[in-house]
Image (cartoon, rainbow, N blue to C red; front, top):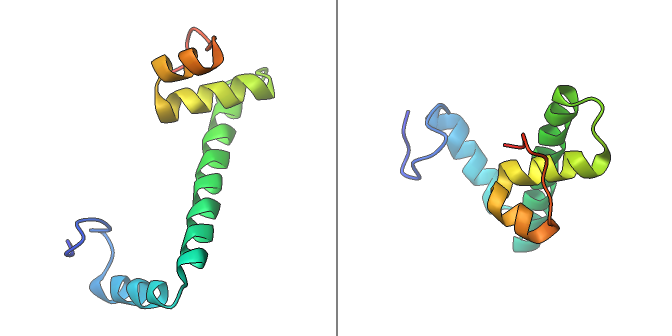
Length: 88
């Protein structure tokens, strides 16, 4: 069910209201810390999936493959000078 924010459309209105209620009790610093934790979790999950796909890859290669998925091949190649040929 859509809500006024246009996201979490698969969440019930009651659950969404509770989420907004809980979120309103957090300080700006707590919200920022939560976003950092969620971002790190997302990166860890992405890297775990890449490790499963490329079990022989080094940590550096895993890092680059994950970065390519997040930021695009062109940016990562400019920043690091190299990306695996099949990184996508």
